[in-house]
Length: 248
Ligand SMILES: NC(=O)c1ccc[n+]([C@@H]2O[C@H](COP(=O)([O-])OP(=O)(O)OC[C@H]3O[C@@H](n4cnc5c(N)ncnc54)[C@H](OP(=O)(O)O)[C@@H]3O)[C@@H](O)[C@H]2O)c1
Image (cartoon, rainbow, N blue to C red):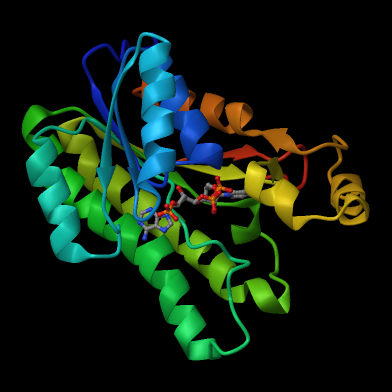
């Protein structure tokens, strides 16, 4: 039986735009009290929270860099109770500048994508286990399963690492009613992606997807809802990729 989310507090990291925004809206539609997190753009996060409230939902904004250990602990202490954690924040993998060395880029990517996921999951676990109910959903990528292009190695490895975090929290969370799953999107149409791709490149990338189109953020949010509402699925990877990758 799928579970009601009424009264549950859901923290979505990196929810000021794109997929995180859609996840926040979807959880709010299920009556969860949503915390919209991001590190930089308060205005964008506020507008997501306002959109949720205008639809009758409950939302607050909390700015916090998920890679900052002290700030993460403070966020969980301030929120008091978090029942659902969606680790969605990432460093945009197309943001590397020419001046950034390989080592610097690697550290930056791992810091946000992997350390951030670990820190939030640890802080979440410490307080959710007392209530004997919790959900962790990590947003990975189809890129965790396919050999990376030269510019995407750090990103792909960071996403693959999230599966290790999922498994650890699935195993250690089970006695406390905490499940952990990973959702792995393929090519998803977001405002960022549409800014980045030329029409030609867009068509080329679509043709590499067996279903012939990008997915929507709402289709990813659907998979997150499934992982949150089904309390018997844990340690799993849910693929939302139009057939780009078939799990065994
Ligand atoms: N879009 C796709 O096609 C695709 C495909 C596969 C997987 N994914 C995964 O899906 C998730 C969402 O993707 P997206 O395309 O929606 O991402 P996006 O547009 O790049 O948004 C990233 C979000 O993370 C926030 N953020 C960045 N650094 C942060 C930090 N240190 N602490 C807290 N928040 C931080 C950003 O806000 P601020 O900059 O204001 O902090 C923003 O809200 C990511 O995990 C991504 O890897 C996306």
